Image (cartoon, rainbow, N blue to C red; front, side, top):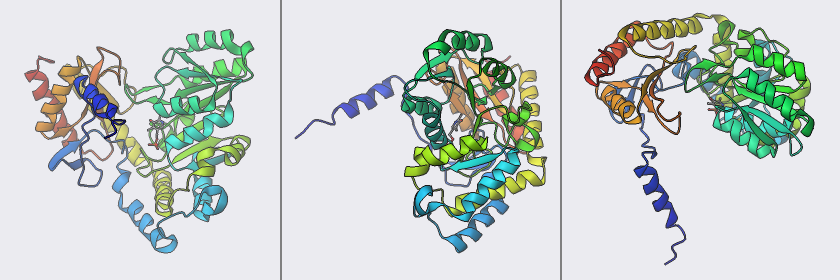
Length: 394
Ligand SMILES: *Cc1c(COP(=O)(O)O)cnc(C)c1O
């Protein structure tokens, strides 16, 4: 018998002994404030369903209607026979919503990054990347073949220093930052970053996955939040989080978007998004354009939860958004905290090393507009109970 795969169980055991093995929980309900997880009804503070749109009746109905008209599958990649009028309508609606010249959609935010970064830079170029950037930015950067230079998290002075040190050696420089950092809920100082990239005339890209539908007027994103319209070269976003569906996008100047249509590899070599997905995304934009109520409620919920947690004596870190980390320090403590919350019917993830720095373990609470005040109060009660029991608060 061959033993060429024996290394895999060895690696799996190593993950388990290092406490890095993913035990994946199973949902048997739609996304929402409440979930059935591993057979238990729990209050959900783990999803990126910021506005509660994932199971919104209007979105579900739009997907159903299009399913009847256009069927289930796209049948081809965008550049051969996969572009339906629906895809173009989505891109047009997105461009209007975001007040940009042009927009291109992708199957996911992850593929949007894999498509975009190699279109902008290659072997002769360098990427200046925030040290806490998302995995899909890191992977897209690696695929591009460009030299990757990390700058200190949201540190504009360090960014400027790196630009000065590296500008002469490379053909082009591209600065990339997350918009909202999902581990801490902090916002990139995009206004100050733009000043620097503009001063040295280097390209700027922001990945606003956690800001799309959350930041800016009615959820128009980080560029709108900082009033930087027309200044940021490339704004990547996702429709898989606040939009409640699945899909990625890039918004910006027409010359950039046209180039991505020609050269973005997931656009050229992976099938188009499905008709129901696209219809659901269009419905999400319609809901966001109709009213800012959901976005307002998301922020109200986030502000309420954070201020009540602080009153209880918890440390909510550097959060500036509805993503609320509860800083606990020790990984084991965070895991035990999360387990006791779950026993009490509250589902919130513990994040430890290496997902976050050593000694900075936390519970991450993802607030949504779907939560009622009662839901938030139940969560606060649970945190108080478990916090006292584990000696985190008095
Ligand atoms: C979630 C996320 C993505 C991936 O988006 P999907 O649409 O889920 O593939 C990309 N970038 C950042 C910063 C993210 O947080």
